[in-house]
Length: 434
Image (cartoon, rainbow, N blue to C red; front, side, top):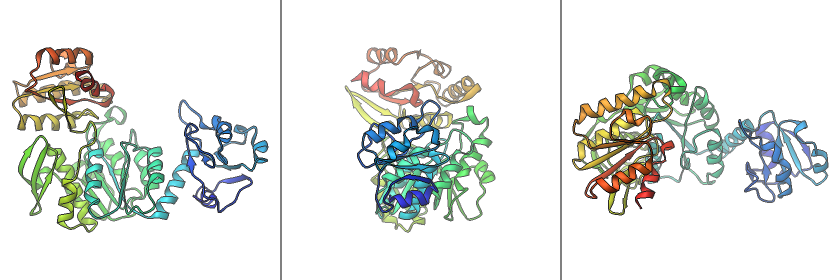
């Protein structure tokens, strides 16, 4: 961005010498800063980027943002070397303002997605669908907080036509903040479940937090899972579209394939699970709203490939594994086991702890175990972790112990299905089996 744009976007108080037409790159990390960059120091609970301003200058930065004159004892000395300093009340807010400035300048259509589970997969399926017609950029991995939003917008190529953003939250007000600076045209809520219930206390509060996504929406389309709680909570008076698996006719499905009819058209996905079909419905409707024809939508869905640890099929030392260990909560666990029970007889479920469930975490694990046994009394299952022992036995406290059990007791003719919260690091199962 030009320095004049930085000042316009943030309203910063300027010190030092500068060329207002000079183009600069914003850097928030002194480890990767380059000569000619402008340093924007961020602050957190355990770090203060302003303490590294001198290091940034010494590495060739032409200047920096900062919040307090007291934080730069050498500012006048550095000004003599033609450094530029932009004083703002809060550097994260400045970062968001700069991102919003660029978002408006490039003016892509913004599709914003949130949900208790499925938001990353929905983001990937939506992006794959829209790529049949448009130049699309999407949130990398799960960079779905305020800093990730800014990074995504700054990494977005200048010719981007559609920006697909994933929005995460841990509490009330966080998605509203993301909505404010993203200004979405289309918003999607994949579902409202119990993820983060330990922080928010109830599904009602989770729905309230998720529905903040429409707070600063500039477009007129809202797409969401057909949930009475969402319908009751969302404050949006324009085009609302709700969907569920009940809206489709499933023609064929396997663990790595789905074929279904929706609104008199046939679609295919190279992934299994009813929940993935539901995610695809939101992508189909997004595509329709953005002018894609049916062939373009069909092609985009068929081109979708699951990302690592999200229903990822791998072969390890003769073991066929489906790895969906990126995250887990009671709703996604139930959907996961439902799919397996429907499609497979020879399998081993390997389930781990679900995180961030608050005071009722033991109860949620017990209820999942009861659900599984009610569905299939002869379920072939092992669990890993302190909480997951409440789901089923046998239970192993460590991944190493579980892998030894698998090596010594499980036939390679049996497909392994992995599901747990990310904190369980279930990828270690695959590494050790290798």
